[in-house]
Image (tube, rainbow over all chains, first blue to last red):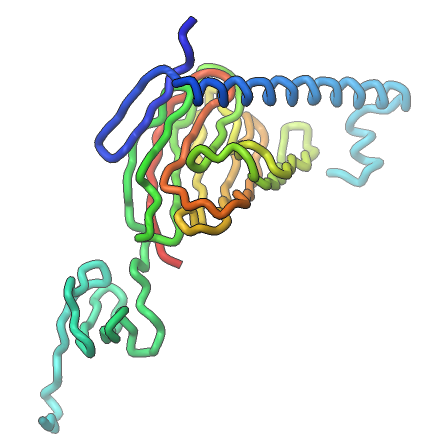
Length: 69
Length: 213
């Protein structure tokens, strides 16, 4: 499996290559963080919908209650 | 020397603020046509007649431009002691997948403090956006939609051994907009930055300008 490519520009020099070990390690760390945030966002949305259902109101009505526009 | 005739006068060297004498001597006087000011060389800098120090560069000066591609694009040797601040303009941003475009200075992957109030979406309500303490990157915008996104950001003091600040407009998906304010809270001097996409490859253009504060 090939690694993601990076483009490195320095003045007129442009290099495109696969990520080296250090870059790839950072990339994987970033991907783990993005995935964790995506999951947290999904869980938060589920909790919000569950709360609205329990209260028996819509998202728009909740915004009105909270003074949102 | 005495000049008393009403139709006579002294005329100093005439130039522009970007074309001043390369090797000035103490007390040398010039008139800048673009700023409409007279400046005197005080042995270390050009001082305007008003007493204010003449800025090195009163306007935006283009440093470099090019295209973004791949998963990440690093632009090296762009920040220097020449300018205090930089304007980075990104245009025609798209990506192969929905996701965030993010930025790092040098290889710094910690100490980013960010506040990004976001507003406007089709439901008529607003979103408070996000904030991060000690994050590993700065999210700039969300790409992956059919609309090509453009944005402009100001970067303050990246080259100084002090905190680096970033202020940017943010296009967040198809219906969100807002701003991103970020501080890289370390004392490293940076000469490079990287733009990357979290989920796929990106395309677009960048232009970097320098200016003095």
